[in-house]
Image (cartoon, rainbow, N blue to C red; front, side, top):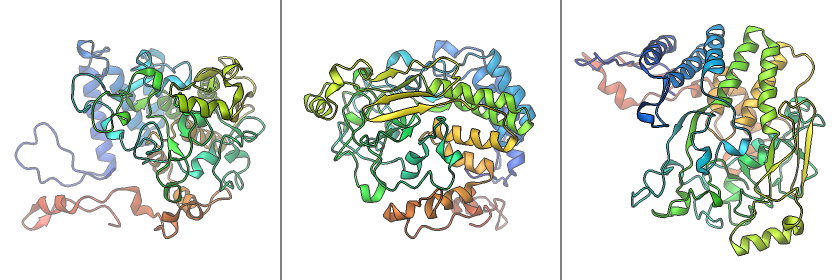
Length: 452
């Protein structure tokens, strides 16, 4: 977040007025600490407590630091060790990753997650996903508040695909973002990646098993657009909702993924592409896409009578058509996706295909960047990816002022006078009170980040 920071060690006990280290020095120190952790930690969680870090957690993070340092060959070695010898694997379907169902909690895809707990004796639900509580649909929804952290028009448009089931943003770079309207379930002739409706709540589409996303679910469409965050929300049938606490409907036991195996695989693919082993990169991307093809959002029959009636009114075949019954509907896709898979639902045409042919390095990196956006959307990785790729200013200014045929400043009122993103925005400003505290003989040892 801050880049050039002081680095404190266990034996730093006398003078805390330390100067910044460079990014490279910080990375080197992190790798020393991670190697120490790898040597000290066991391969299994201490005391059998699943959420604790292990030797494999530390190895996965070592590879991540090597990626951010641009040490691609080293990252490949580390990530392949984790991939070939570690305990992680992709979940069988995308809906098993972010979920309140206990059988998938701390599943094989989890490398490190915030451990949320509900209905465990705490009277205020404070061990739950407390930090996410404002990021649920607003007052007209079953959750009652508060509509923060909304998906953008730009993000929803990015899930559109072409005839091959590949990202439209890659095959039609000047038009993929042209839709300025609320992309509702009624627009089901436009083919989309199935991960869209596991990630985003949009009108007239089932929201897991809670009923149709719709009127009143969004706090202010003029301010934030018509869409809602979905990954962090529990399923009604999961029993993950807290029974206590202020607005307990926002509190659940859904773990918050900080690092998961799909993220690691895509970083490995990126390192392979950077190193020139393009076929390896393509195989990994297609593995991720094969998993995404396994299930799509089904009707998810709600228990609330009013919500159920609204869903039946919108989609009368909900109770009789076996192709749409249940929350997660299998597509029949093979484990290894070899051709585009299309699943037509009343609210969406889901389509996803594999990458074929031979990539050059530029094509490989573009496809990997697209895949990271689709796979990890709304998980907090995007800005750091853009910064690592050196395109944060270009993409974020395009997001506001115009990219792919659309501009967020014409859609949402708060962007009309947005400040331009510049190089200084790559890092947070170091708090001035820290600069003042770390003074020796009237001069601070701690330098402010450039531009602030």
